[in-house]
Image (cartoon, rainbow, N blue to C red; front, side):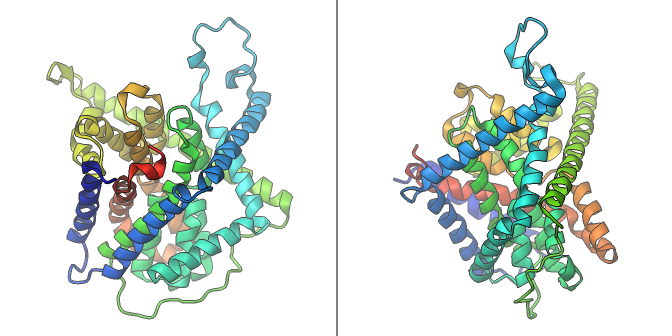
Amino acid sequence: MFSLLNLQSLFGLVVIITLCWAISENRRVFPWKLALGAVAVQAGLVLALFGIPGSRTVLAAVTGAIDGLAVATAQGTRFVFGYLAGGDQPYAVQNEGALFTFAFNVLPLIMVISALSALLWHWKILKWLIRGFGLLFQRTMGLGGASALAVAANIFLGTIESPIVIKAYLDKLSRSEIFLMMTVGLATVAGSTMVAYASILSQTLPNAAGHVLVASIVSAPAGVLLARIIVPEPDKEAIQSISYDSALKYDSAIDAISKGTSDGLMVVLNISAVLIVFVALVALVNLMLGGIIIFGEPLTVERILGVLFTPFAWLIGIEAREAALGGWLLGVKLTLTEFVAFINLGKLPAEAMSERTRMLMTYALCGFANIGSVGITVTGLSVLMPERRHEVLSLIWKALFAGFMATLMSAAVVGALPAAVFGQ
C-alpha cells in the first residue's frame, strides 16, 4: 500500500525534474517521452531486481560474492601489511573497533576489483553486459549508439574508463552528448568502488550489496534524463550504429590483471589524495568558524551543509525528523566525497536512522558527483579529447549539479515504490 512518504517521494521527483528544467539552456523543449521512459526504466529495474520471485536469491548471491571478495582481499592485504591490516596483533588490543583502517580495509578492495574487471573485460563478459545495457538504453530512451554505450559503460567502469570505450567516437559527439556522458559519469560509480561501498554498509543495511548495485544502475537513466533537460540535443541524426570493437583492449589475461591492478592503484592514490586534502580543508574552515557559537554549539561546515541540504533529503521521501541528518550526509558527499559519506552512514547506530532512510540515503549518496570528481573529470577528458577541453570546462559545473540531482532522483523513485517491494 502507498503511504504519505511514497507521495512525498513522488513530489520530490517532480521538484527535482523542475529544478533541472529551470536551468535548461532551452526551456521551450522538454523531453516528455524521455522523462516517462527514464522513470519507467528506473522503476522497472528496481522491481525486476527486488520484486520478482527469485530475484532476492540472485541479490543474496551477489552479497555472498562481495563478502568472498572482501575476505580474499583481506588475506592479500594482511600478507603485505601484517597486523596493520588486522592480522595477528603483537600487543594486547584494548579497542577492537580501532583496528579498522580505511587505507587497509577498504582501498585494497578497489585494486582487486579493478584487476578483476579488466580480466572480465578481456574475457568479453563485461563487454557483453555493457552492450546489453547499451541496447536497453538505446531502445527505451532513444540514445545514439555511442551515447548508449558510454552510459552503459559508466555503470561498471569509472568516469575516465568509460569514455575510452568509445574513444574513436569522441570527436563526433555533439555538445549535448558530451554533457550527457559527463553527467552520467558523475551520477554513477565504478564497479571497484561499488564493492567498497557495499562492504562499508554491510553491517548496518540489509542486502547492502544489492542496493548499491541497483543504485548505480538506476542512476544512469536518471542522469540521461536530467542531462537532456539541461542541455537538450538539437535536431539532428544521432549515431545509431557503432562498432563494438572498443579501444579498451588487453593483450592477454595476465596483461589485463597487471594493467587492471595498475589502474586500480591510481584510483586508490587519487581517492587517498582527495580525501586527505578535502578533509584537511574542511577541518581548516571549521577551525576558522570555531569562534562562532550558534545555539550553544560552534558553527561548522557540516552544520551549514546540513541546513542547506535538509530540504533535499526531505524531498526524496525521508521523514522530517531524520531529514537534517540526511541533509548532513548529502553535504558531506558533495564536499568530502561519497566515500566519507558512506563511512559516516555506516557508523550511525541502528536507532539513529530507520531502515527506509538508510536505504534511500544509499541511493542518494551512490554517485561520483562531488567537488573532487570535477578535477578528475576535467583532467581525464582533456587528455582524451584536448581539442574539446573548452566545452568540458564550460559544462562541468552543470554536470556536477545534474549528476548530484540524478542520484536524488533515483532515491525519490525508490522512495515512491511500496515498502513491500523491499521486504520492509
